Image (cartoon, rainbow, N blue to C red; front, top):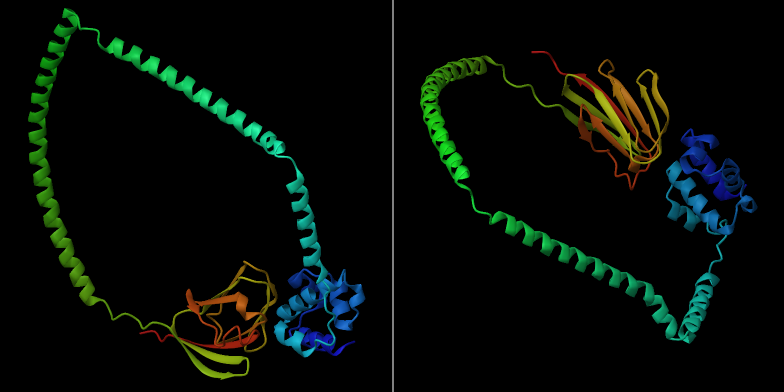
Length: 320
């Protein structure tokens, strides 16, 4: 086993992560993970994958991959991909030479299908335009037909009937308007009375309760202690934007959660009956916490402290 393998294995065991759990986190087969820990890189599918697998391993157990590569560069084989750009350049050059030698007639043949499609589209457009022109001409001819005497008489009678109905409607509308005005006056009076009652009720209400506060009590290394005050409840939501290991237990050691928190999932807890809860977050850059619906900033910068252990002490609000 190499020094790099020992370092990675120790970090994994400190996080209480088995090889099976690490396989789920990194999507790397268990036999490759074992090969990395034992320094047996011949098990890998290729030298290119060695550095990629080691980087994923480091991120899963909370180690800085760049620092590991620099510290143990003697234990990590280098990938040999220098010839690839040169080979690609040769292929492109040969392709350009072949293209330059092709006769110009091939370009015309390539454009022929496009020319045919354009001609067909123009022909269809002309047919549609011609049809619309004839249709509009027929419509205008039909609308110019003069009305007969019977049609004029029917139009006059219809106008008289409409005038009579309009007069009757106006009379009925005036009556309805008068009733509506009386109803509006009554509603305004009722609203004033209701408003006075509401003002009296508001005057009797007690002063609003203080907002909850979360203060920092202690912080050392990667461990921090916070205190939740002025809160009627202690509810926590933990959402993961990346796969991470999560451990949750109370002051007596009772475990609420101790497993892999998959990407895109949320775990909700109600600790209102607990006085103290401890959270062990394996990969803090991929975790967001909320306490009673309000976001809680992690005590340490996730880019500096990947693993964080947070203790929250709960002091319920005193009933008034």
